[in-house]
Length: 259
Image (cartoon, rainbow, N blue to C red):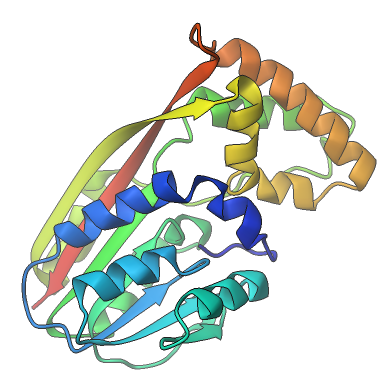
C-alpha cells in the first residue's frame, strides 16, 4: 500500500488477515493463463506479494512501494523477491508484464483516466491488470474523520487531507473496455469483527485512512484528534454485547485483460 508519506508496517499488519483476504479474492478471479512476469504495485509489507507468489509460483515477481518501512518489512518476509522503493505515480518502466497487481493503493493516485490505460499498456497481450480499491468514503468511519477534521482548530491544516480519487464500476468498465478483451468489475462489502470496540476501529484506520490526517498534525494535536474521533466512532459503531464492533468495509475490484 502506498501513500504520500512513509507509513508503519507494524501498524498495517495489526489486521493483516483482514487486509489480505481481499487480495486473495482478487487473485482468485484472475484468468488461469500462464504468468511469467508479475509486479505488485503498492506491495506494503509483502502480504499481497506473498498471495501473488502463491498464485504464480513460477513467475518472476517484483514489488514496489513508496514507504521505506514497508519495503524493509517485505524484504524480510520474502527475501527471494526483489522489492524497490518507488513512487508509483512516477513509475515509467515499459513492461511487459503478464500480471500487474495493485491492492488498496490506486485510490491515492490522481488522474485515473490516464493512469489505468497507462498500466494496461504495460501488460503483454493477454496480460491482466488486477486492482482492488477501498470504496468506503460514504461509510460512517470516513464521514466522521472529515467531520472531526473540519470541526477542530486544525481545520486549515487538514483541508484536502482526505483527497482520494474514486469512481464507480461503470466508469472503470467504460474506461478499460476499449483496451481490453475482458473487464470484470465487482463490489464486495466485508464485515470485519474487531474486538476492542471503538479503539479497535481507530487502530484499523490508523494503518490506512487516518494517516494523511495524522501526518499533518503535531503530537499534541494528533492525540486530541484521535480522542475526538474515537468518541465519534463509539457512537457511529455501537459494540455488540461482547465488545466486538462489526466494521463494514466495501471494496471495488477490477480484473482487466489486455487485447
